[in-house]
Image 1 (cartoon, one colour):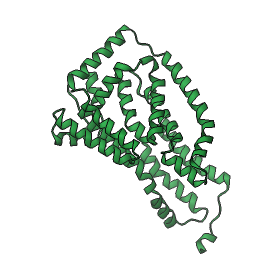
Image 2 (image 1 turned 120 degrees about the vertical axis):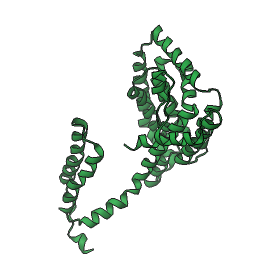
Image 3 (image 1 turned 45 degrees about the horizontal axis):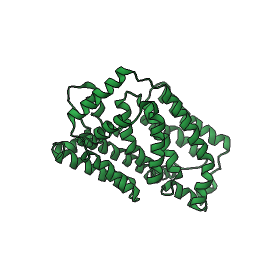
Image 4 (image 1 turned 120 degrees about the horizontal axis):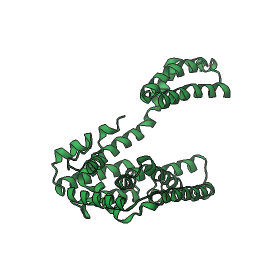
Length: 317
């Protein structure tokens, strides 16, 4: 209590100065000069600690508060690592290849962006998770996009937008429930009032993605290239229904409100089983793929690049 008397409430200007100095410095040095973000965040302590101590906090208090806050950051880290393992297993099992092959059959390249946007909205609303959407159907759609020759950033945009918009409208979403509970508002009243902002967002975004799709030019040679990619996929993986089982399993678990990380772990185990029992890999090899990523050597450079991905180690950066 005695220590509290020496502290001062920071003024708005002081708080803004602190935020601008720390985050602005990180953004400029990282984005403009290419410094490693992780090191910049670490070095930001050197700036943050004196600024906090100036208004009366002791270093021991700041360190205690810092470590008390860290558990809140662990969920995204665990999720990211889990996704890495999942991608490695799903590449080995042919799951991503099967979904990519199917997507290249049925998705019109001219409407890829708007279709992906709508699919991800619906998936997030049904499952209540934006992370789960990006980590499952999002990965599959990215595979389709890469197979069609899309810039990965252009392909990721509608997937991420749809995932977060749908999550905000879902009564199953943890964030939607936490927000309504924190302010003491009925859940469906919260969703109802959120529609005033979300519906215009969906309409504007859908129009933008539709217009962007009109600029997707695929001539006869592009169509032939897609057919060649599909043949390459079919020649290197056993396709059919069985490789789709891990995706279906994850979707089913999320629909039954199983938390995201256990659902993805089950999907990873499903991918491991399909990879060993159906694609012919050894269990040891698949576990290695879950750590270091799946690597193909088919002789087709594009197919190899498309499916040589994933692994927990690839997510550490």
